[in-house]
Image 1 (spheres, each protein chain N blue to C red):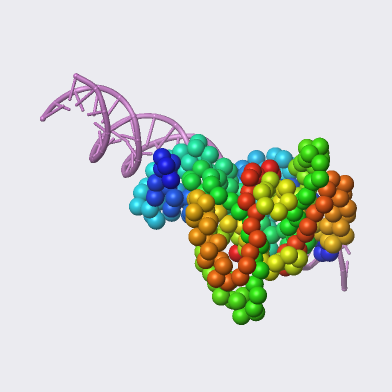
Image 2 (cartoon, rainbow over the protein chains, first blue to last red):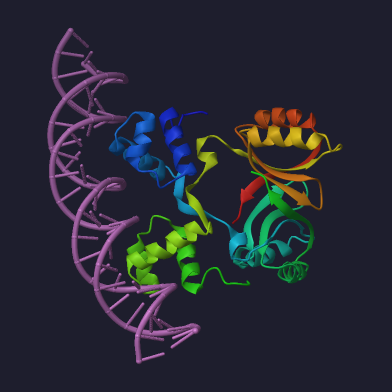
Length: 142
Length: 142
DNA sequence: CGATCTACTTTCATGCAGAAAGGATTTCAC
DNA sequence: GTGAAATCCTTTCTGCATGAAAGTAGATCG
């Protein structure tokens, strides 16, 4: 809302890029009735405003053996445990994403591993910092 | 594991692309000691194997007013509720991601909204399908 | 040993991205 | 109303990336 950082055309360009960032500016331009250069300028502007943070690939961890996918809610007892836990989580390769949350627990994490054992040893390490509750992902729907 | 779909070089290329998919094949090639064309061939292969599913952008929903970010665990009472709930969730713009999980609840969702009110009305709609538990994201750490 | 396969490099053509310059439209002060 | 400035677009042009094709080196196997 508020000062309208982006207009409708920007939004449509952004949606196209989210779907497929390899589309040429020209192709996007056909959708929004502009030349590729005009689209390029708008994209550049969104990059400068950090609405667009970067370009990346969607990929399938399961295809390279990362078959275990879990959501872990972390409960930390003492205040002192937070920084050391965060250092661990930021560093650990198996933690793909972590957020501080209000509601249940202190932190929420997405964890990926190649096997139940790897997950299990991860959870053992995690116990060094606090308690947790885990949900295993059965299938992604969206 | 198993039949080693990708080797170490593929993995390094993939990591580079995850970090920044605008890197030219040539630049990636310098990292892995190959020509850009060889890198291109490996990337093409990973696309065909659907290890790489597509190209997209990382973006910041907060910058365009999507400031509310929450994780919702959904509990469905009857079996009959599942398909109708899933149809709702797949369709709804505010549901960014949804997974079937084992552990607590039936489904886990990532929800984004522009305001507490919008989240609130979303949750009211959700009550039509089952119960839920919600965690509000305070800050993303990783 | 020779055939085949795989994965790389070299060479080449198409076309995209970004810079620069020019034009149309809006906004604002006076 | 008029001129200045800002904004946003189009047109033009250059460099470079991508992808195809052909050639080469090394591994595998009968």
